[in-house]
Image (cartoon, rainbow, N blue to C red; front, top):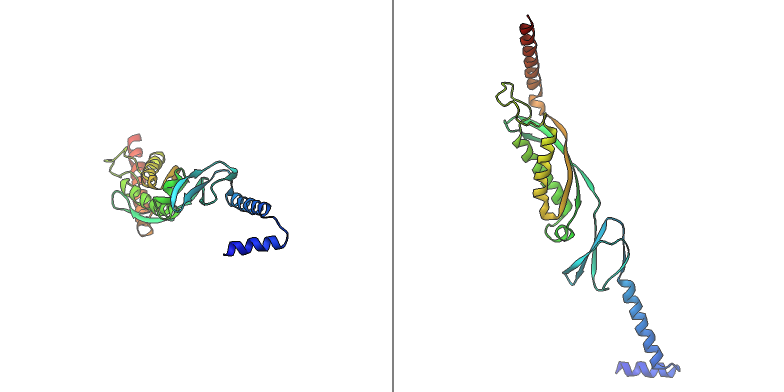
Amino acid sequence: GGAWFLVRAISAFGLQWGPFAIGILLLIAGVLTLAGLYTLQPNEAAILQLFGAYRGTSRVPGLRGTNPFYTRRKLSLRARNLNGERLKVNDKRGNPIEIAAVVVWRVEDTAKAAFEVDDYENFVKVQSEAAVRHLASAFAYDEDDTGSRAGEPTLLGAGDVVGQALVRELQARLDQAGVVVEEARLTHLAYAPEIAQVMLRRQQAEYRGLLTCAAAAAV
């Protein structure tokens, strides 16, 4: 067959089959070795798969070698910022407000990030928006002017409490994608434009009332 004609052709040129075969095998081994080499930067990981089956994650930076038949998908483990857009929502008392937040996050579990969600970056964006909306509905914008809710944490007056609540909310939502939330805080908070003037006049009236009471007490 074809192999026999190949041997005859090699012999015709005065080549010996043994050394030639060894050379071919060494060439194939070299190609496979090079195919299995890859590099990783610091804070970078490579997901290894063999014919679709997950075989592990490599996190050691530098020149690495693995099975040449493994497919490799690289993921960044660096911290990232998500600057959320301004959202118009209702606070706990139903007042329309504008709110935005920044989230610092990174991938911790590469297998979850790659296989548990379709697109982990988009998943972080969508779930962060949902978390901010839910947070806004759980707190009032500011204290009630009647004083009946004095001491209750508010979006405006309890930044640390609100930030911690946002981190917990985000972590519960993003754990499915193997993401760790390192920090989250509000970057914008205001009444919606349609009621901003009304609330401003209300606050000014309250302030004048406080001044009047202080003046009366001083007499």
